[in-house]
Amino acid sequence: MLTLLKLLRDGRFHSGQALGAALGVSRSAIWKQLQHLESDLNLSIHKVRGRGYQLAAPLELLEQDQLAASPWPVSIHHSLDSTNAEALRAVDRGVTAPFVVLAERQTAGRGRRGRKWVSPFAENIYYSLVLRMDGGMRQLEGLSLVVGLAVLNALRDVGVSGVGLKWPNDVLVGNKKIAGILLELVGDPADVCHVVLGIGINVNMRVASEVDQAWTSVFLESGAAVNRNVLVSRLNDSLLMYLKRHEVSGFSAIQAEWEQNHLWQGREVSLIAGVHRVDGTVLGIDQQGALRMRVEGEEKVFSGGELSLRLRHDS
Ligand code: BTN
Image 1 (cartoon, protein in one colour):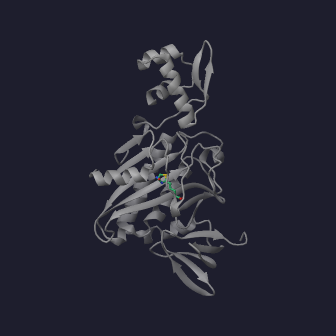
Image 2: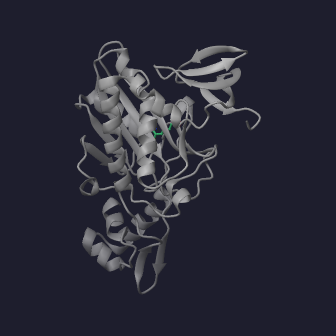
Image 3: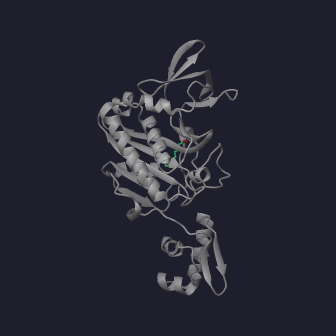
């Protein structure tokens, strides 16, 4: 199916006979594969008698040779349950970190707090970078916030304006989410462990009725389709730079820059942890990346992957 897709991706007409000859299969086998492309990948294909088949729009796929020299080995998959899940399986198989897993689509993309990450084919970026950590807890401090800053800068690099962060690691334009980050860890965080930095960026997505929160995409913000190979290359460069700074100088060296990009500094918020809720004002973050809030006149500090923030009274 992938070979057929590669033949069709130029957006031109191809006759059933030519496609069959290229793949060494019958015209009816081509017909069946085309139906799979439409139903499985949600692609629209024009079928015109006498001319053949044409994708409704040309398709730009992720390609090794179009990624600028990557600092880490990258594997590109046509379809995965989740790039984070595949990254964890690779760690289990003994693949040496660091490495990156990319997919054109995810059938069970994972979001924070058990949510699903909507991952249609060839529209967005689904990216997992695996790092081996042997420096104890200090190396993990603020890591997910650092990744947020790296994603934000990659988006600015491709021309998205008005982009900012929401603690702990949502990347937003206004109140709409453009990228999400999910860190997963295996091993002993106090000794040797592997951490998967899972990043989802909405790139060329225009409609997605299944997304259950306010969202946007690079296309919707900039009005132009973005080459995902270029954005992955920018993301690699940005991550490399921020992760190096974090490793060398620790999170405290990044804290001020993170706060400058925090959209909700000084805002009235509710912090939600399951059924519990704490109301207060955002003061900022501490040197470990924990959230500082004023609650009933006192400063309190909160951390943990299951927490999330909401604005109160449209403050
Ligand atoms: C969030 O809920 O904000 C986090 C979303 C993280 C999505 C990315 S897509 C690539 C990687 N693989 C996954 O299954 N999830 C992360």
